[in-house]
Length: 422
Image (cartoon, rainbow, N blue to C red; front, top):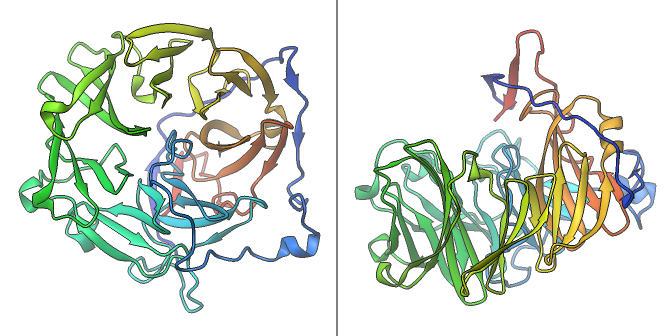
């Protein structure tokens, strides 16, 4: 049985609607009782088959499109063989890409899924990727004595095992909540220790073999977070921080093989807004990002920067060809080319007509033309949420009904308490 945790509701974010522009596509929210395309009602009643142990494709580990945004109720996601792996409240779910059907990643017939020491689906991680035919994640729980540890499992959730510790007891600085996710890329794991050292190690290495690539001077900073990235043969880390004067800034570093080879590539202007929510993407030596209502392009090695377009939103997902901008005020997803051209726009009005209790939404990931959006119902970051798939080519919108939080009870609005299963 799931345990519960009480959390006070601090704020409620209300979304306002507005009329659409001339290029806006028609609303096409599929009824929630309609089977996915290509399936019959009978086949829709069947649960998807879990991936086979030992199967799956081999990738470099880092997945650009799956590494853009990790909302509060969907901390980690990655693409695997035939579908995706999603984390919700500490449990991993597998979702078929073709149908959108979703199952808990635990095939044990006797498992009640309420004991994290025995349930295959339990991972409780902010980092999830697919590499060498297996799922990889990190953990820093009591079973690992709070030591950051790289772990792996088979695609069907079986055979969990620890690969290596990423820190020693000397690196422990007390209780710590990580505000970043590591990066597995090209046979190495990149991560940040509590003393703000950016490190890497080979997969299977010992913590004594950690290589320090950069160390942040945090003496004049109030808070900070990190985002790793890889493109071509280069590895990067973006540091977002709040300085002592109350200004936010983002700095991008090109990581070398040692601290002496790491160098700063780009630094944003100081702005009085939270760039911790900076949406960015790196491809072909270009940094694309959103800031202060602008869509920007930075040529990293030439040092030039230009504004591509003025845009009505700050949350976006990217591919190597396009930016997909979510606008809360417009209740839409707009498609832009990486040259700044506005290609199309999809209205999300039908989502808000179906659920009048939606208070905020977060983009999750993009794969091809499919844009995934998580919407909280009943309160800001509510335990009750709906996951939608938006086909940006056709404009079709479909709710993924197997999302585990879709049927969660809404918080008690009188007492403003959330009931959060953990």
